[in-house]
Length: 142
Figure (cartoon, rainbow, N blue to C red):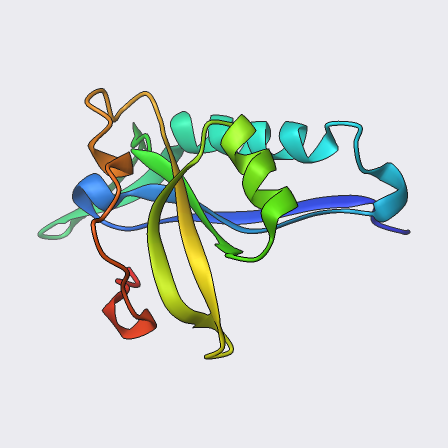
């Protein structure tokens, strides 16, 4: 079966860095300009904002498993600094440029780390832009 649209993401981080991450979003050229990417992004944001995580708790010989709500603080993604159409689309979806990552793509092109705060981040701390660019080795990978 031919895939016309796709979004791939994950949740990662710890504490106030717990977030949804957009690994990839793609729409086949003949299906663009129909707001399909927006719908895919909204789906990933909704999942990140309402995520339920199974957690195992060990206490001596007893193991308890239960469902715990652990909502993400924000959603982030990386985009090539030269990809103006994608940047504009993400800005329309209320993403902001959080930081520039120097030589992020193949050591040649800068990347932009764009973020959107979710309901758990009431004070919107997660989207306050950094004042200076960073290098890939400064990124945290949780």
